Image 1: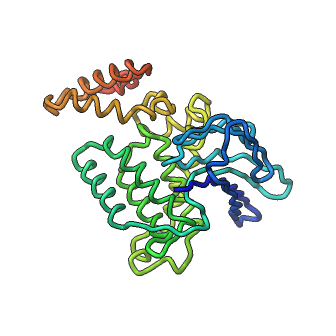
Image 2: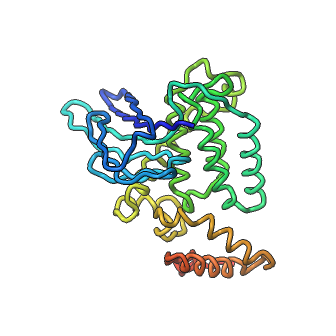
Image 3: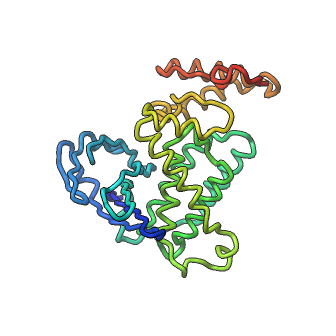
Length: 311
């Protein structure tokens, strides 16, 4: 399958209380992204510094970005555009897909199987098993171009994603880039929907105002995934988890690259252990050791929250 690299520039403005979003879309064939080659998108130079079949690293807007070609949808933080009269911001969204002007097949059955498997994992308390399934589903979603086919439209895909976000199909603080990708896709689909997309089911079940919650997540996760060590990113990270603090190392790409492998190893190691009171301490100890063997020092919830009693 031929891939295309998409760059969407999104400008938002507020003038006399009236908001507006303007999207500019450019793309290029994926096989043209050669290391060391320069391109220009939206009047800004892009330079490829690394590329293989799975990943692209590039410099754009004075920053270095790393994106997984298969599943990731990468959105940047907003920055202000100087304007004396109105409040105006700009951000970019990057992702790989088929040619946005082509048509492609959509399998309701396959997508349904993925969702059913994730729901079963949730019921069994094994959310970590949803990581590869969610990556596969995102790939399926973003490959339907341009967000529309005969069998599925943007409003339906936004509804599916909203259901997964609301029901915690993935842990936002274990896989922040995966969660961020879901939020970015949801927002894009809402931008590309039309009134004709709404049948009786969607009119009754799709929350038209859910984008407000998703936009708040996008704001936070764009900073977190951009540079987890920056103060604004740490502030956003701390605001996600309610009362309990979570080690910021979980916001790093190094963590997200290996967390599924770690959880799988720990689950196998503890498969015969009773899951009653005190199990969490054995789980955290095994997880910390598995992460340490991979070069990551992790502080468990009990270490991050010394005044909290866990069982």
